[in-house]
Length: 245
Image: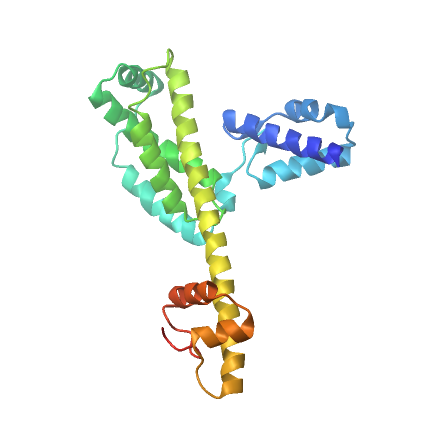
């Protein structure tokens, strides 16, 4: 068990390394991370496959577009067509914009945000397929970028500032995915509760040959009044065999 935990920890470390490197690691980095496990070639290939499934390139960047649905590709094309109207800056121009934004110039911060709208799209594609809409990921990333361009004064170099901005965008998307997953779990638990109460009410109603009250259902089913009332609220008082309070 300890060996398995260490192995899982190494996978997480590699994913973090990839995140800092634009979702890319080298084969040498993977081999070094798992050196103590003395993996066979076939076992190492399984690790490479695991990373690629999580959109982490090994040696070469992954093609994030391959992971998008048809609907996401259509939305993305429409969105990118809109972004074509925005100015495009060369490498030197962009660095100058970053440095000015770091110095607190509001006009430069706005231009930097414009530059980053396309960057946000590329990052969002790496997080697609995790139970949220691509457009929502882009929206969260844009909000993070809009905030981030005003928080770069603490950095000395343009590359550092852009790296920090990328991290802010990625963390915003990760937080959104995590929040959505938590809400989904809550919704599933609530649905299970509604179904449980509805089933118990139906059985008791068949026995009584009429709708039953909350108190009767609680007494006969063992369910608490609180649980029954929560299920009623969640269903919008639509549990057919249960009398409304």
